[in-house]
Length: 127
Length: 185
Image (cartoon, rainbow over all chains, first blue to last red; front, side, top):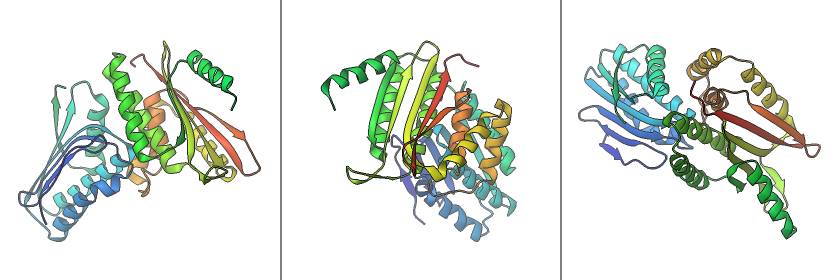
């Protein structure tokens, strides 16, 4: 699996996926019409790690400015896969970054934590 | 179209506070352009970031709803029609986003029922319902499996107004009016 790095566009976030360090970074706005297509490389990497029963440390950092409802489904699917990795014994570190005063984004992070049952590090940043 | 009608269209838009309006095919590129224009526009109004985000968010969901779910209707122009109308208006109280598109009559009662159900929910209930559909709803290739309209209602904070105008035996025209109050609550 090769490292993936995709620059942000008006509709999709910056995406970095490094299989060597098992690091995933998502940063920006996520409002594509076809979210599944955009997030497929992430799903594939996570599925591969699940199949390998990895015990490695996995670092995930998510900072979303806006996301549409189809992205919200994809982000949930990413977290579900991370929860499975966590259950299999991997150390999963999730950082959820949101802008100060963006209650919706903070709440979204809290909701995801509750739904998948793994703790996130919540980080508030200035705009 | 009679030329003098153009002025009456302009005037009625002007009177309704329309800041942007479009009629035509809804494509991915079009959505990108419209969203960019509206983002700049909202910035220039010096709107509170919270309101700006709300309007932008509702706009994204509305336009993508049209893009994904609009029924194709036979048309005399190019055989099939994926054209719709939408308008964004601004008044002292806030913003309104209006969409209009053809819908097959067989889909009317389902959509009507869905909007009525959503309109009957309180703010807290909507939040729970969103989480429930997010967690259990089927992921469709097209989108969030029905999350869009719930999200629109949540962000709007007002009841969704709608109208189905019967056009032929098979087709109606569906109009959705979403209000976004500019008071932060």
